[in-house]
Structures are given as C-alpha cells and as structure tokens.
Image (tube, rainbow, N blue to C red):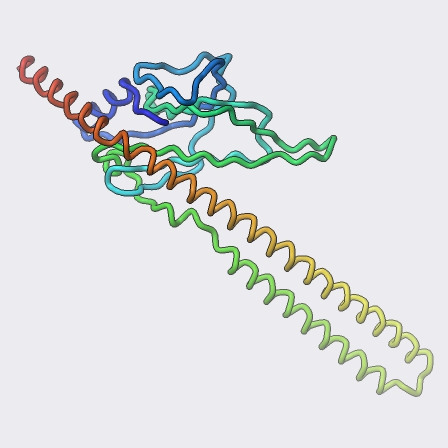
Length: 268
C-alpha cells in the first residue's frame, strides 16, 4: 500500500500555493531487510540508505487517470538486473521522497548470455492520488496511449512479403518466356533451367520465411497483449487499493492548507 509522505504532502502544498509544477524525477527501488509488506508505510519515513537502494531510473511513462489521479510506470526489461526489492518510492526533482510503497520481495533477473537463461520483464505502476494531481503534474497523456497496435505491424509485414512474392513470380515468368524463345539452343536452355530452379528454391524459402515470421509476429503480439492485460489488471488493483486512502489524504491536505493559511495570516 502506497502513501504520500509528510515531506511529499508539504511539497505538494507549496507547489500548489506557488502555482508551480510537480515533477517526479525518478523511481527508487530498494531492498529493506525485515520489511513487513502488510504494515502500511510510515508517512514520516525517508529514503533508504545507499546500501539498500538497488536501482534508480526515470519513469518510463506517465499518464493522467482523472483530475485527481496520475500514474507513473516503470518498465524493467530483461537487460536489467540482477537484484531484489521490496520498497518502491517516487522522488521529485528537488530530491524529496513524495510517495513510498512496501511490497513482498520482487526478483529482477537479466538475460544470462553464458547459460542462455532468459531474464524476466517487470512493469511497476505507481498511482499518486490527491486533489488537483493532474493540474500540478501537468500530465495530459491518458493510459490508453500506452497500448501498441501490433496488428497494423503484422498487416504491413504481410503486404511487404506478398509484394516480394509477386516480384519473384514475375521474374520466374520472364525466365520461362526467355527459355521458350531460346529453346533451340540447348546450352542456353540448360542455363535457363538452372536459373528457373534457383528462383523456385528462392520462392520456396521466401514463403517459408514468411510463414515463420508471421508466426513469430503473432506470438509476439500475443505476448504483448498479455503484458497489456497484466498492466491493466495491475493498474486497476492500484486504483482500488488507493480508494481507501483518498479521504484521509485529502483531509490531511486540507488541514495542512488551513495551517499554512493561518501561518500566512499571522505573518501578515
């Protein structure tokens, strides 16, 4: 379960009061010993020690769910690893820990070229929910734009291979016609027959490659479709989990604003 830290809450209030954008600079992944994922994170916590931090990276992408919810996504492909983590945080460009989340230990492995073992791919979505989140983060992209259209790519590939096949057939036709015209010259006819056989083999190989490539693209499409479904499920889970925190966070933010207003009135 993720929480907005006290420092993050104060930063958000200052940014909103000054009408300045809130910029999330990076994800921070850490492995914190003896961390109970069932215990809600403390809002007064700070960044784990450098020895516990295992990975840092800018968000892969971000999107607005609605006016009060924005989501940041981190994609870890099979070139990233090897490490384990159970703590996830969002850092602002000022170096403030805005939000933190605890989880069961997650393992991230990269490809091992020596053993041929394939690494795993992970996607982590982090939802920030507070009043006016979309306006202060200035995020206008919606999650729907994260979906890739692999059907169009498959169609383009099929069209290209069909054009190549037609070209080979036309070439084969020209060779046959030329062979007919030079039928009386046995030596020339023999060479043309060899050429025709070569073209036939090339056409057969091209068709085989086309079938193999189409199958590969279809499997890749199914793989990415599955990833997209998993991402949608993960995002929906995050949305459901954070609904319970909405009233508390907005109430705390309202109290903080009232305190800031009183402080400003006192200063005046």
